[in-house]
Length: 176
Image 1 (cartoon, rainbow, N blue to C red):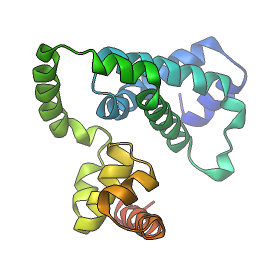
Image 2 (image 1 turned 120 degrees about the horizontal axis):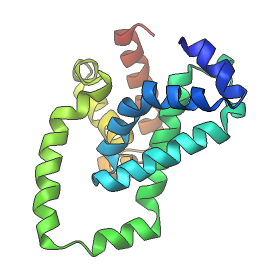
Image 3 (image 1 turned 180 degrees about the vertical axis):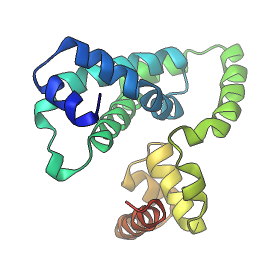
Image 4 (image 1 turned 60 degrees about the vertical axis):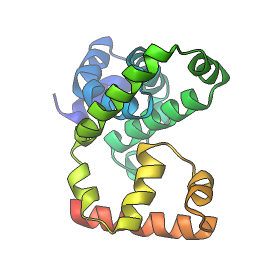
C-alpha cells in the first residue's frame, strides 16, 4: 500500500490502515524516541502515545506544508521531549537504584552505535563541527534552542541562524 493510499484510509479512520501505519513507521519512530527516552518501557509508552496522536490529529496534517513522515517524526520528537520534561518522568528518574545507572551507561553506549536508525548519521558527520554539535543538542538530545544557546555560550539568535544553515546543509547532502 502506498503512502497516499494509506493517508486516504487514515482520513476515513479505517482500522486496518492504522495497523498498516504502525507496521510502516513504528520501528523508525521508536528508534528516534529511544534515543531521547533511554528507558525501553517508557519509550514504548511514548510510541503508543505518538500513534494515538497521529490517529486523532490526522486532520491537521497538511501535505502542502511538508511530508507525512516529517510530520509524524515531529510528533514523536515533541512527545518524547514532553515526556522528558514531565514531573512524573523526572521524579521516576530520581528514584533509580544504582544498578540502573550501570544499565543506563551500557544502553547509552549501545545506542550511540544505533543512532543511525533512520540513516542520517553519515550525513550529519559530513557537516561542520559546529553544525554537528548544534544538531546533536537540538535533535538528538532534545534541547530547546534556548538551552543549546546556554550550553554553547552563544546568543540565541546565533543558534537559530546556525541551526537553519546547518539544516540547509543537511538538506543539500540529502538532496531534499
